[in-house]
Image (cartoon, rainbow, N blue to C red; front, side):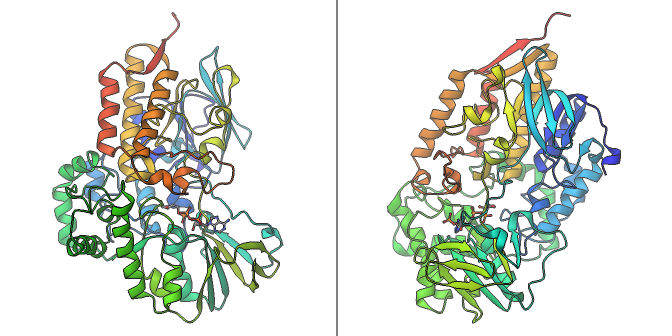
Length: 542
Ligand code: NA7
């Protein structure tokens, strides 16, 4: 594929990553007439959906909402097959978009950006890759994704294991056949919860190592009916507008009642509706105080625990699978297909790591504090260094040679999650302190890409050379994000939203929970006020 790629070493913009963010950013910058190169570590487009090929991988936002809205023609010609799209279908969609808009000719695949240094004199970024290339660019746009740097469990011994080890986030392209094998899965986040039932269908014995149980509910996935697809296609514009102005990028009716004011029957009926609809957003936003009041939240948590007790035959296993240590929704909740049912199978064992912690991987298997279990294969479903991991994996140096790692030593600091003071002309698509992972990523990606593209067009029209936020605007935004977060239950939980899953990572709530619509209005207002909070530098006189 790289045969088609332009190899220019001096361009207007470098985009890092060819997932949905990088692809759309390339398309818009091309339309603006900018010379642009995309550098992508994978061998094809798709980002998250290129890497996460584990069995059962599926998006838990409905397919017709989890898709680009920028091209009505694309929207009409593509037809989703399932309510919740499986990874292969999303990847096919990404590949279709790449073909349709002829994107690959500007993408360099199998290449990682390792370093990016801002040259203050030239006011350009010097971008180095692991293939030894250096590209000079006026704009650097990080489209590196929020969950793209896989994290292994922090236990020794993986290199000694005689069987195969897989990470859900870097799954082999040829797939894995677990038939007849003894398999151990470590981790019960979304990746574990989606893959465990599918692996259980193949494996001779499956052992699930759970540190923290998650709140999960059935996706009730199904093929889409022709009529519902036609109806959505007829009303797509209106739906997209609702997505853009919603709380999570998924339009749901807004709650008006406190859970604590409702009767038990009213609450149960409401939660049952969300459960039956297979809608995470509906469950999280059932009542006005679900995400802000522990007691209110507990009513939703207990509803889910009740369903777990109904599904799981062994009361002890049901209890071990029941989350109690944190509020529902403050760790990313999951949608599943037969997750809890899987623990009724005789060949599936749940190991509660809170009682018997993981000690090491041995040549034969996994040793917990009480025993060693032997496996033919081990699956790490242990998540990612979320939100900042992929950005900090690149050695980024801004003004004065200051490194981003240094600037973010106490946690990420950005203005609007879009730009960083001291790092001119560097944009972060769905960066920390924007709604990002607390939203339908497609909606947030499109909003950021369009904001960035408009900003670059504005700079060109006004002969402006660089832009970056003022420290004051950045400080004020960071404080605002923290204040809005503190009004919710999120900061009370050890989650990857808080950086708590990576030892030594600063504990900061890294997403903006004010709502996708509110955030969009804020970004638009900043522009309407002459890019309030940003400082521009004019182009030097010719
Ligand atoms: P998650 O949600 O971060 O889940 C990772 C799981 O792995 C979680 O259950 C962790 O337990 C567990 N884990 C991580 N490290 C360890 C160690 N050292 N020992 C034992 N268990 C461990 O990642 P996913 O890939 O499932 O999902 C990421 C997102 O992708 C998801 O939320 C969706 O947005 C899509 P813990 O909870 O930390 O105790």
